[in-house]
Amino acid sequence: MEIIDAHVHFDDPRFDGRRRGLWEEARNVGVRAMVVPGVATPDWPRTRTVCALFPSCHPCYGIHPWHVRQHAERELALLEEWVARERPVAVGECGLDRLRPAFERQVELFRAQIALARAHALPLVIHAVRALDEVIAELRRGGHHEGMVHAFAGSREQARRLLDLGFALSFGGAVTRERNTRVRGVAAWAPDDAILVETDAPDLPPEGRRGELNRPAWITGVLATLALLRDGTVEALAHRTAGNARRLFRLDARDHSSRGSSL
Ligand SMILES: [Zn+2]
Image (cartoon, rainbow, N blue to C red; front, side, top):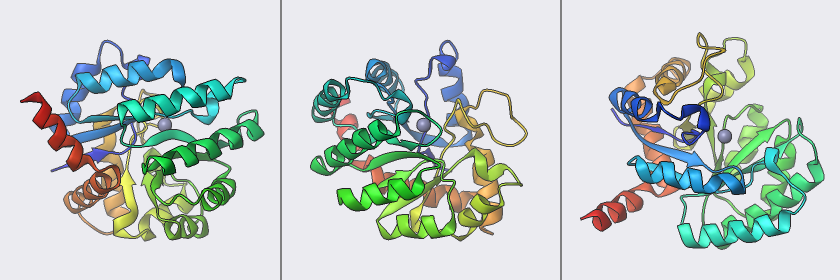
């Protein structure tokens, strides 16, 4: 079985000292690649280091809406340098979060990152909390049509608009909770070629593991729920979502070039 975790903070310091074991545990359940999003300028070197240590961990770099700071111009210039030099699989994690301060600054930063992704022809990795309509408006305005919304939690109508704009929907721990009927409904309905699976570990543990540190191997819980909701098999869903992730983040080209350079 091939599973790709489309969004996991594997570089998070909460994993320090246990990363090797967690990586092996994930390999053992079938995880073959991970996309690891950088969230703040001081943390990007750590994201890069962790991804260099573990095969098929692919970094992307962005400024998360939780990390909006005063001197954003300098940070954006730095991001441009990193994207040009490091050639990540995407720009992000970026986006909008209504539960966090400085929403206007968040919008400015998100706009700049959409433009950057577009200029480098890279997909966007998007965080949207209580701000999906605003995210959709910015994506439309920015004219960039490639990327994914991680931990999708919106309505079917919002999902429809994102799909029309060319974006994929990534589902994680939230779908494992029975009371989340809305997101489970979207997860059951979304087209096969537009869905991804993720853990967002160490956050958002699946049902039955709440209060614990989420871990990459628990992607199997997300897959099991999603397969049930979509009336399919775990194997077929893993295969399908892995194919979608490979296509979106162009992972095949990455694996070939890294294999080539290590020879
Ligand atoms: Zn994240």
